Image (tube, rainbow, N blue to C red; front, side, top):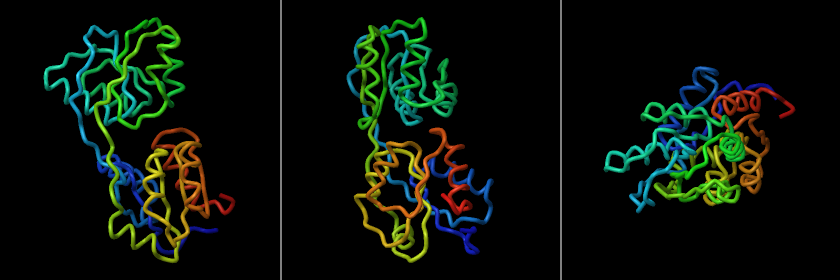
Length: 243
């Protein structure tokens, strides 16, 4: 199917800051092709938990929000080691801007665990994570003889779709929906069903499975779990008749 003559609705479901950044990326790569609708499906809230006594050899950070939560704790007087093991390049970049010596696994939880186990860092590690984090990083490291503790320092609270998003999802035309986590897919599913045919771009196979009950007319999984690959998949799904 050729690209539509009118801009397609594209729902930007990430938290506001990340959604706006992805919107700019899409607008630069594909100017005028989409009606960009910002409708964050989650918003962060931050916690101040009791942390185990240091020293830790390093921290583990698996999201930008985790970096922000850690920075807030540092401002409140907590002291963290300089080294940070990060799941991907974007998290590592944000961690460096927060003052960490950050190393990126350039992938997912599996890649992060493999990177740590291949290093000479014996721990103990402190994983500053979200309430609904996946991957069981701390217990899996501990099972390999690398002591690790997980501290829940933030949550991503579900948000309702905006009126503009609901209007697009109630229409007869296709709506492009990039989904960046299984949880965002679940939050969207809980607010359906929707009459619009959905073209879903998923950041991972797990996200695609979580979105399956939305009955997408088209479904594509990004080649890598990052924003660049997601933008490429969005471009492909609207241009490729076989997608």
